[in-house]
Structure formats: structure tokens, C-alpha cells
Length: 376
Ligand SMILES: Nc1ncnc2c1ncn2[C@@H]1O[C@H](COP(=O)(O)OP(=O)(O)O)[C@@H](O)[C@H]1O
Ligand SMILES: [Mg+2]
Image 1 (spheres, rainbow, N blue to C red):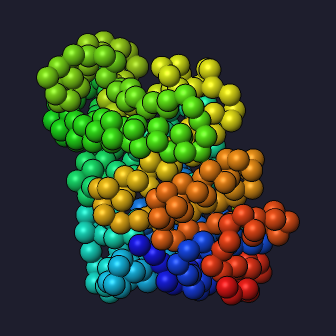
Image 2 (spheres, helix red, strand yellow; image 1 turned 90 degrees about the horizontal axis):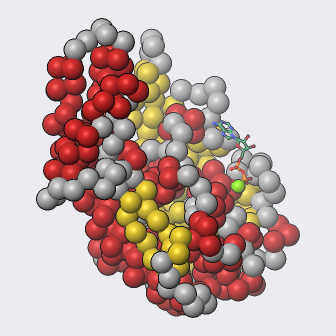
């Protein structure tokens, strides 16, 4: 799929902006602070209906304003689509409310998610192998929320149940409530948690071989492996429900002492390894980068396989961070390998990336504007 037009209202530094995009690689060039990343973030926010890199969605609102909007015209094959997301601060308390629209009409998150699909690659992703588990969990959430609306629903139910249960656990610890206060949150927590875990397990099983193939194509000989590390600490059980329940039972004392839910998908992670050796400890920096590129390529493949369409690929300053071989490998995998229909790539003026990328259009970003420059 692809985006033909992107419009912003009070998004980060942009009061208003309109960007016309083309199929192929759109190269966005500008100085540091010019507003390149903001454009990619706007598109990713529109796809996910929330801040794509963690943090609060309302951090994206232009400082001093009370309404933010992102809208796009998309093409999926021959079908045109219109998507719109708005955040407004409601007086008097200034609570933010979100509205999602598709084809001009308000829709629920379940009906909205998946209409625009993006695979984004931010500079911090290059550290995915060595980072703590949080960005790896977020990565799974970003893919799975776009692929399966039931996953997005389970995720929001799980987050609510977890917050409520943790609040109840604190009350119990402080002696202001008895253990019965935990009861109402158990079922919603286990039910939504089991859905998240079974999706994540399956995702990693499928993404593993896809990532391995991509890594080989980028030039890595050792086989790349991905392995789900569930946050239930090896508890046995027939299914995820049973495993979460067992793990909760085993951790009851610790939970009460800490006033926090200590097992479940909020503790999930996955291991990245080459030939059974964890990449975090044993892989060279080049191999770690290859692993990340391959995991991202697998994300694209998964959209092709499961969603039947090529996602829009967002590469924020990533190409200029890579050496020539990795850059060529990534571009080859995305282009010839996976047939990505559209990508947005950011770079500074002096990056010399134009030749490597052969863009379908170069856009100059600066002064709150985006201008088309060289057509090809
Ligand atoms: N919520 C916000 N409101 C207003 N300006 C913001 C907000 N968030 C970030 N900015 C500003 O937006 C500018 C553009 O940032 P960015 O898109 O990251 O530029 P680039 O990727 O081209 O370096 C930065 O100078 C930053 O201070
Ligand atoms: Mg940037």
C-alpha cells in the first residue's frame, strides 16, 4: 500500500503541513531540527492511533495548542482510503480525547487499525539487541496491533486490568484492603494476557525463519534465531491461561510484598541469537545490526503474508548510520526482495544517500514546510 497525501495540524513543530508522496522511495532531506522525523512520526502515529515510539500521544501536540490532527489519503491496490486522527483537549480540565475517522466517518479503534500499515525504523532501533526488554515488547505490539484488531483490543484491556490490579495490590500491601480486592481484575488480566502471549508466541515462531532468510541475504552466514521468552517464568500449563494462572499463584507472596503484578506479558521478551548463542553477548556490532535489519525485514514480510499488502516503510536517519554493505543489503531486501511499494527515508543534506537510494522524489524539509524538488 502507499500514501498519496499526508496532512498535519499542530503536530510537533508543524502548525500545518501538506506532503504529496509518491510510490517508491521518497527521500526527505533537511538540516537537523528541520522537521523530518516529525513527518515520519506523524504517519506512524496515524497508523497506530498512538505515539509510535513510547511516551504519550499528547507529547506530539504542538506546544501551546489544544488540538492536533493527522490525515492521509491512501491507496491499497486500486482502492482509495481516507484516514484521520484528531486529539482535542476538552475544557475545563483539559483531558485529551481522540477521534478516529475512516472515509469521513467516525470509527472504533478496531475498525480503524490496520487500514494504514507501517513498518518504522528509528535510530534507536539499531540498539534493539542490547537494549532492555521494553523496546522489544513495543516492537511486537506495533506489528501485532496493525495485523490483528483483537490483539489491539486485548492490549488495551490488559493495560487497564494491570493498572487496576497493581493499584489493588498496593492497597493490600498497605493493609487498606484484603486479598479479595484483587479478585475482580484476575479474569480480565488472565484473559487478555493469554491472548497477547499466544499472538506473540506465534508471531516470533513465524518471524524467526523470515528474519533468518533476510539476514542471509544481507550477508550473515550464521543462522539468526528469534525465541519468545514469556513473562511467566517457565511455569508449565496447557495453554497461556493456565500458565499465567500458575505463575500468578507461584508469585502471590512476592506480589503482595512488592505491591505489583510480577508475572505476565508485561514481563515478556524475546531472545535474538546466532547459532544458539545470544547476540547480546556474543555477536559483533555488525551482526547485531544485521539482526535488527533482518527483524525489520521480517516485520515487512509478515505484513505481506498475513495482511496481504506491503506496508509503508519509514526509515528515519537509519541509512546514514549504516556502513555500505548493510545499507546495500537492507535496500536490496526491501526493494527486490520484498517489493516494498513505498518508503519514506530521511537524511541530512550531506549524507550523499541519493545515489544509493535512487529516490522517486526528493523533498526538502525546513522552515515548517516541505517542498518537492527534483522529479525523476
Ligand atoms: N510538541 C512539540 N511542539 C513544538 N515543537 C516540537 C514539539 N516536539 C518537537 N518539536 C520541535 O520540532 C523540531 C523538529 O524536530 P524533528 O522532526 O526531530 O527534526 P529532524 O528530524 O529534521 O531533525 C525540533 O526542533 C523540536 O524542538
Ligand atoms: Mg530526525
